[in-house]
Length: 483
Ligand SMILES: Nc1ncnc2c1ncn2[C@@H]1O[C@H](COP(=O)(O)OP(=O)(O)O[C@H]2O[C@H](CO)[C@@H](O)[C@H](O)[C@H]2O)[C@@H](O)[C@H]1O
Image (cartoon, rainbow, N blue to C red; front, side, top):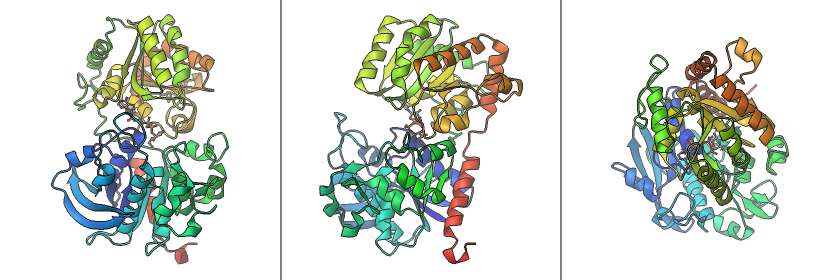
């Protein structure tokens, strides 16, 4: 079975968040189930610099008025198809923003072109490879099923995965004529959304199946509290909606072979974890101590509940614990955390920015990973935490609720607890969860068991890759053969 995956970021070529991890891990995870997955992504400067022996496969003189080439390149066993369109992607900055962190004004065109190219591939643009199914991720790939529906690949099944429904790719109606789509597509059953164009809505409307990255989030987005305005559409399509929880790449995230951490360790040989604790303390300029260290690796935003966490920074210190944060995001939250770090230089630390290497040491050297998100489609850092013995303390929402078992009395007695959950996302509820975690940390036997159970938990892609493979297989059964 051949599947084209379309994403705006793919680890290890380019990453700003969890989408890249998932799009990067799926090809290998699915190949075990007989799926030949190739990944189409934009040829940003960072991507072009990493390609090895790229081979031009198809040229487009007029991809929405832009000249572009599809380059094929294999890296670490993954087949990449890169949309090389210098006019759109040969720029400084991140995948979505310029060097000053401002959104590119033509993001609609950059990602519409990606989707148009994906549809061209579905229609046979590559001589040697045409997919059976196309799998689009998030709004940047949302127009893919829309373009496909208008042409010769209209019958090919498509999957639209929502990694975060808060980002919808909404643009003014003036862009519609430039998308090269028939006029009726700009309607309520198409890509029109309150008079604007919405890339994600279009994808959700036209895809054969919709998935999101955990069963709980699949239910949550059917409600107005989580659906961000798209709950009506999600409900209308609930028969085609699937929640498949994310796994993690257990080769990239493996404390026994991780090149980014200070010392390797494992369930069988846990002692060296201590060396990582020390390295993390050095990194944050904390003096030597046994105090429990709460870690955060996150975008610093309202979604992630960082405002609530920041309010509790002084309490954490008063409770005899420490807080180490790696992230960047809203200026006010960055400033507030910075101020907390200045008030408590020995116990609160902030590293601003994006740092892949440090994100691994945070998991290997922290005692707890804190994820106080108001909503979280799946969340990956709590899964990395489990694997590294960095016990998760999470809000009871979305994928966090699905992946962590709260250490209540019953779960502790049954020996199944893996972390701490709290709800709602309020200072009081978070404070209580932190207290419970600190208390458990003070009981070495209880703590060791919690850590061990997390490290043993199956956070791999095995089960979920099978769910995707089964979904693809189901979509390929012709309508006439369906019961
Ligand atoms: N400053 C920093 N330096 C280095 N690394 C950093 C970093 N800040 C974050 N990261 C890394 O970026 C990733 C973040 O992934 P998450 O799943 O936690 O959230 P995100 O909101 O990006 O993803 C969305 O998509 C994913 C994938 O489906 C869903 O799990 C999630 O719920 C949804 O919001 C992790 O790999 C983390 O280690």
